[in-house]
Picture 1 (cartoon, rainbow, N blue to C red):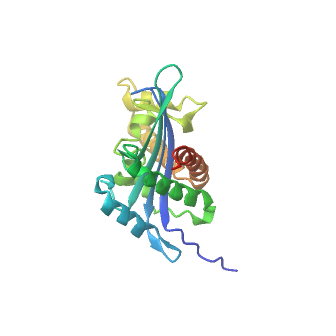
Picture 2: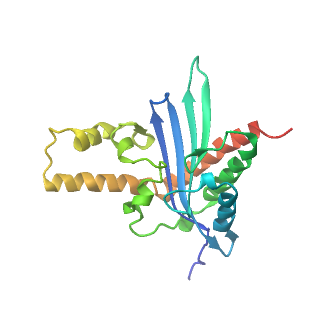
Picture 3: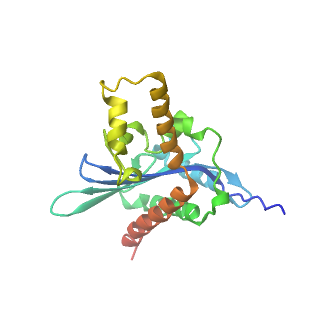
Length: 221
């Protein structure tokens, strides 16, 4: 029996959580996705309308991509600051951008409701420059594999950060071609995992909860 084809309007979704030490100890939760219009909705058209009204928030890597980020920073005396970004730009400058937070939450909600068979990933998606530079917006994923700028939550409980740091940066590593291929494949597999449906789904639930908390906190009276 043939299963009905599911259309979601969202594909090539990636999720990553990182722990940072600069500018302040904290974390960054990021989702990147490609939007399309389909029979069930106009995700891309809605997004393009928002960007036409707020052109500063366009995605410089792909005009169908949208990057969502929730950042926390530990300041002083146990106080945490929050920064929410869409395509690398803060949406918290003033209240007229709060609707963008709710829009971001609607996307995270939609991903959180998706079933495994709804997730569509283009072949060789993990190799594309625009994908690698969009997951953590306008930054290289390598800087978080080796701990240069922060550590992947995916690596918690392992020594993978230290291993990547050694193989990618240590001049004494002296890798031959076969070893270089192993490191290349390891990087590739990490990026694939960050786009794996089960991992992304859990991330979307977490992102939705964070955005709901902030949105509820700033509800108009």
